[in-house]
Structures are given as structure tokens and as C-alpha cells.
Length: 249
Image (cartoon, rainbow, N blue to C red; front, side, top):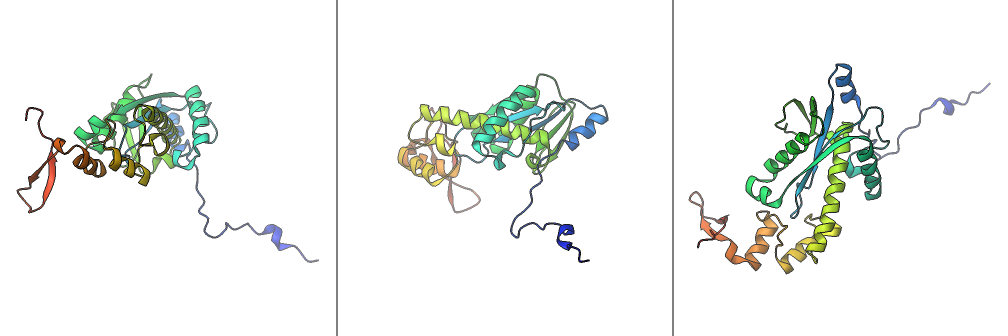
């Protein structure tokens, strides 16, 4: 008798295809078993754009009502993000905080992002006893905090926060597009795509642009030269933009 060995052979993944494991609730569940609850995940959206705020979100998922399909927001279509946004809002505790372009200009993008993440956690309906945050940096909260690099693709609560932050920011940028037409905020959401750079060069910066991001500085020099001053650095022979002209001058 000849046996068909093919039935026992495991299927091999196609070449060039990378298997992606979805985020899990494993870390949160381990804390729950130790009596640690609530457990929050937090993430932000909008570090890279030239315009608009950074939006941070903190989420505490209900272990008994976790929506199916939660994943890193970057892996989801816009339509699926919207669906999961509504499901997360209906089943979880969450809070959102914003770091405005003015705060980004004052503090720098990293500090502004960490500030917004902290504010989001502090705004939760119930203070968490543990926080997972996406990235390398922990935030200043009154409980234990773990920073997880690539956390939006690993920790379920962080993935949920990434969806809340992304959808909230996308909706906000569509609203800003109505306030400042011509830049295309409704399509690129403020990111430095060629269409946005062209509009910035043509129209100059809007009130929603981050003043000290390089392409915005170049547009200010072209359209609003009176708002910048060139000074010589004491340590080099190069010139660079170092400050704004005080209003009293």
C-alpha cells in the first residue's frame, strides 16, 4: 500500500511573505492574574507631520469585551480603523490629549509627545495601576510604566490606543482642511508628501504648521522673512536660523 505523504506535509509559507503576529492581551492578562488592574495602553499619532497636533490616546480594554481584529493602526485600512474606533469607544475606557503645534515648537516633538501621552493617561476615568506605552520612553505617571518598542504591534491595549489616536487625528485634520483650504490636509493629514511641500512653498505656512520643522522654516523664509532672523553661530562659520524676531523690534 502506498501512503500519500503529502497529507502529512505541513504547508510552507510562500517565499517573500513575512508572517505578522497580531498583538495579544497576554501582558495585560498576566497583570490581572496578579491583581493589578486597571491596565492601560497608550500611543500617539502625528509625530512626523509638518502640520497639526500630536494626538495621544490611552485605553483600558474590557477583558470580557475586546473587539476582534484590533491591530497596529498602520496595518489597518482607513475603513477598518473607523469600525474598530467605534467598537473600542463602545466597550473600553479611553481618553485623548493633544499637543498643539505651539507646544511642539516650544518643547520639541519628543517632549510634546510624551507630555500628551501623560495627559491622556491622567484623563482616564479611573487611574490605572499599570501603563504600557509605545516606544523607548516611559512617561511620568503615578503607577508602574513599561515602554515597549513596537508596542502597537505587540500589546493589545497599545494597539487599541493607536487606533483611537490615529482616527481622532485624521478627523481633526479633515476639519482643519476646511479652515485652511489649499494645503490638502484632508488627504495627507499634514505629512511631508510632495503635494504638501508644493502647497507649502506656494502658499506659505498656515497657523497649523509647526514653525521649526525644516520645510516650514524654508517656507517662512520665502513668504514671511520678517519672522526669522539669521545669526552667526559662535562655534561654526555656518549661518543658521536660531530664533524669532521679538515682537518689540
